[in-house]
Amino acid sequence: MDATVFEYDKVFYFNQLNGILNDIYNVYVLICNNGRQIKNDENKIRDEFGFYFENQYYKETTTTAKDYFFESEGRQQKTAGRVDIRFLSPNCYGHQDAYFAIECKRLDGKAHLCKEYVENGIRRFTAEKYPSLLGCNAMMGFIVRTLNVDETCKTINTHLTAHEYLTKMHEDLPDGCYKFESKHLLESKITLLHLWLDFTACIEKSKE
Image (cartoon, rainbow, N blue to C red; front, side):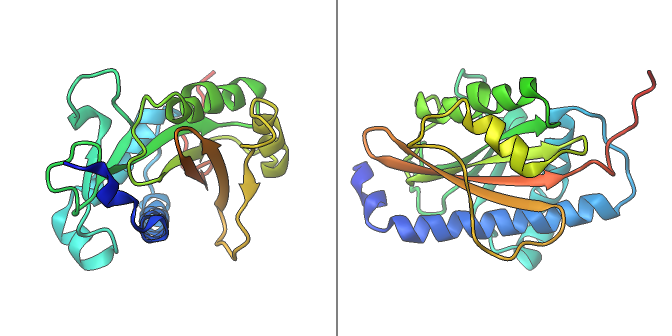
């Protein structure tokens, strides 16, 4: 199949991905309100979203992403290119790379996880480990400890070039939600949207 059919409208796919991230925020609110405590583990937090997006009734009646097929890492084929979350496009017509990839990383304001966010998150896109056929993908930051969002963003940007650093998206956002954007030049320009969600109230307290 000719991949150029996906290039006709980057704005369309950008808006589709933004809609999916809005759906993810709505699920985040449900997760925070259900009263369960979650282990301080990236995969455990990620899997909370699967409970909702894998429920066909919820997806069809509540989300704008009802036509996209949700797939978490554990359900993907065991290859080196597995991503935390995939939303497969209804327009893919069998093209295996026609999906939005969402990589998830924890954030606690400390240097180590900021570096991980770049080296084992953003760089998986810029090194083309994950495809960007639709021109845009996303990162999710799970905030697991109280932090200064602006300072954390600055620390992450020290690991990026001046041409790709995170910039805040100028829109009104609800509590606990932060959005950034970064652009990266590969064979063509790809956009990464960054959605950070505050899970500090939901994380199990350390027994140490």
